[in-house]
Length: 144
Image 1 (cartoon, one colour):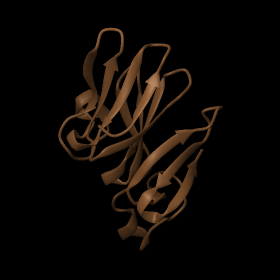
Image 2 (image 1 turned 180 degrees about the vertical axis):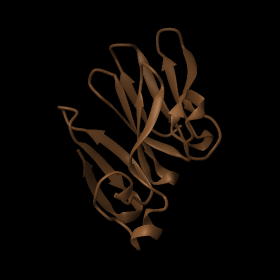
Image 3 (image 1 turned 45 degrees about the horizontal axis):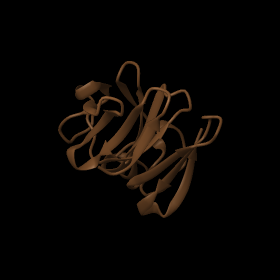
Image 4 (image 1 turned 90 degrees about the horizontal axis):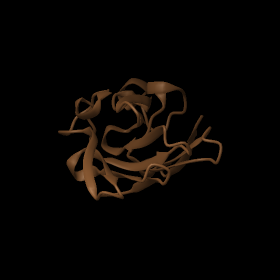
């Protein structure tokens, strides 16, 4: 496991299990671990284990626990997981972006934001801005 995010209201600890390409949840009162999303390494938006990651690393949870943001490091993307449904979508980044736009660290929207191994991720107190440690681009990026 890499990084964790705690939903104290629900008693759930979310775990970025990068080596196994999964996001897991620990029910802290029962001690039960489940896979919330991911299975084998790859890339796909989807629900639960049909969503694929490659090295999910950083996690940021909204204050109300409804949304978990994931730094999908080796896919160079930021993903969003709706905790009630397990639906995972990509909100920024694209592994093909560097080829399309000819370089690194391109600001923009959606797939045109170019990350290179994003790892750390945090939300501001209003859940309106994500701060992303874009590790191999040596930058802190924001996403609103």
